[in-house]
Image (cartoon, rainbow, N blue to C red; front, side, top):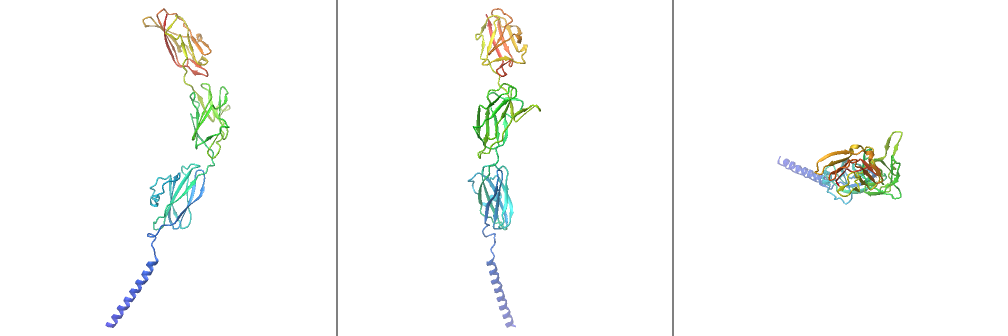
Length: 370
């Protein structure tokens, strides 16, 4: 019995030793991916257009890949953990499942700008979550589209908003260059003018087009030929035809209405603080002056005060008695006040116009009668 037990113990020890040897051999052949290196990743360009970029990530292991988009070049490359977790200031970030050694595509098209450089950064993990190193790719978007007009200042309107000396400013969707061999053309509705812009100033996406001298209240239309401005790649902006459609009674294109600030007189005579009784008052401007179509008797008033400065009476001047001659308007005194009295002249703004309908400013003057 002792001999049998001895052999049993020896056989058991032998079997245990054999099991240990086999187990050690199997453990030596298995390496956990959790403690090994992450997958190898490549990032390649699939296609690029004006406003979209498509890239492909190929990973040596199945898992997930993340791609982030950055504007410009020379961006700081984060580690793969921060990239995947989104701890970066990127324009956009996308994540998708991957199959080992098969490309996975990612398309970016949000807020991209044509003819602009971008950097893409990618990282991937395997089934155990082990991350790859970050790989980068620089891509420049195409520029095949012409500049597009977005808005104008002032906006196209029938309101009188274009002030004297102010331009019509055009805003495009990308920086533009002015072709000085071509012209911006201003035209008017009533006077039939059609003349080239006096000046054109370009600043990035904005083009300020300055009109010539245009009558007050006149509708102003701005037209230009194709390619009067181009983008950096030479793509021409479309032609703009601004015109009045008589059959429909509307203006189309880029248009506004001219308004000018009221104009003050150059002088009011007599220039001294005294005036002869019943003498006329002469008001002079720097251009031709004419009566406003809305002029009325209550717009020109003469007030008389006695020698003590006490109000005596007021007289409305009949517009038909005014004398318009070139750059002057003469206001008569129908009343001959006594010596030592005072006379005040009040003219309401807009009683007459200077040049192309520019209204006059309000006038208030006072004289001692001698």
